Length: 227
Image (cartoon, rainbow, N blue to C red; front, top):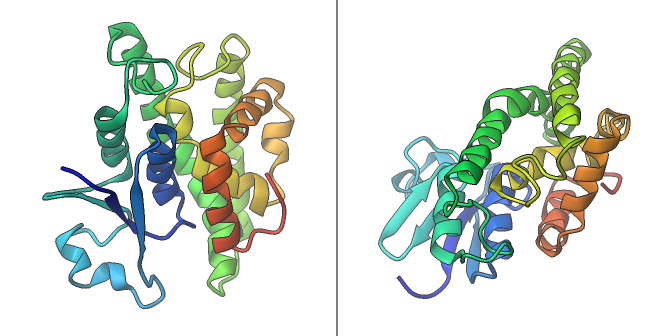
């Protein structure tokens, strides 16, 4: 499998951003193939042959086609990653470290994401497509997100990153929706009020790969402030 891989989606999507961050972290060649989301191109052929669920992103690498951002991310990190700390974002050479990466990646999927997605959907996505947010829904999920962030604050008070003293996929998968929350809503204080969480977020934002990908979300969703 040679040449640049193709990523189908839009750069404004937090799920696409996760995959692009992995590729940027690895220094891999890729092509972002945009879809017309307003025309629901992702719900029609030929895209449905890449992802039968009609969601973004999808990745093509030669004859291999993948969907689901976490699965794509792991593939990218396994294909292009090395054994150095800079490129080994899965830590598969250490069973204990890999277990911690897996654990916090699962926490993001099952605890963090369900709360933050609903805040971002109401405050950023709905207004962007012409809708109106439901503040009762926002308040409900802000409350849930606060409880999750309290757990993160406790974890990050004793560790610079979620899985340990190293940056990993477990941190990276938090980027897209957290960026939308901080740059696109009035709820950045949820992070700012938790010193260890905010320091962790600052370390993520300082990464060169993040600095390349963040503008795609910022411009794509017309966010008003910087993260």
